[in-house]
Amino acid sequence: MSDNYGRALGASNILLRIWRVLNLLVALAFSAALVASFPFEHVLRGYYLSRPPHDPDVIIPVLRIWVIAGLPIFFAIHVLVSRLLDMVGTVRAGDPFVPENAVRMKTIACCLLGLQLFDLACGIFAGILNKAGANIEWSPSLSGWVAVALLFVLARVFEEGARIRADLEAMV
Image (cartoon, rainbow, N blue to C red; front, top):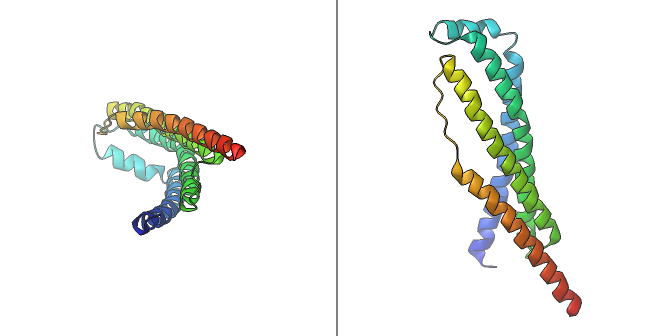
């Protein structure tokens, strides 16, 4: 393995670990904001009432539902990053075509599929909030859907690679 390649894998490892911690911190912040939205509802209501045409009777509950609907996404991101870290570990060890990586790749694809489905839900939430006076821009991501398909195909490639490798090892 070239020195640059090894450094890139090391940097990926560090960045993925940082991402996992930041994901947890943001999940905690969203959870805290959701909890705080109840005792401080009068502050939120006053804010939206001071900015017509905002309708706090719609905006506040929809924002809460949006946060609740989004909390599982933090778990999906945690799983995605953790599986990716495990895969980076096998690549660093020089052994990427193991059956576990095919399973990890499928898990990552499923997590990314969940993120894409949540993205569609975000469009619905944005539409509801815009009707209540908010100004939220949203557009679907085609590249995310392509990535989901690509990951499912790559998972199959990893399965075949691991199977071929096992067959070759059995012959030798």
